Image (tube, rainbow, N blue to C red; front, side):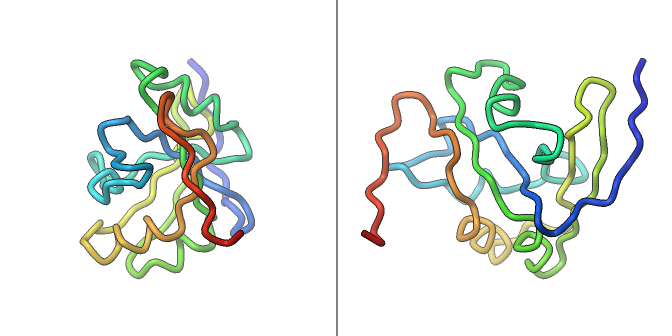
Length: 129
């Protein structure tokens, strides 16, 4: 069994998180997806994973998309911290710790950006163009 060293995650890096299609409405995240599973919100650190790696870890990758959030922006959400917690089969595993109350979920939703949309989900028009 592999035991990875816990590392400090730089603010300039990103976290990837799987999103099952049931948590998407009209191309937008349902805030309830941004919650703890056990002690923290499970993500993958961009140093050791690509978005497709994160998607492939799902039970059914064909029903999942991937969002990314900047580590610095996550740490700016009040009460949240980012801890690298590698698993034997996933060196990238990282938890976002802290209570995910409504305010925190709204802030996460604002900083989250799709990197891989759920299959079959239409692209959302960019309002900046």
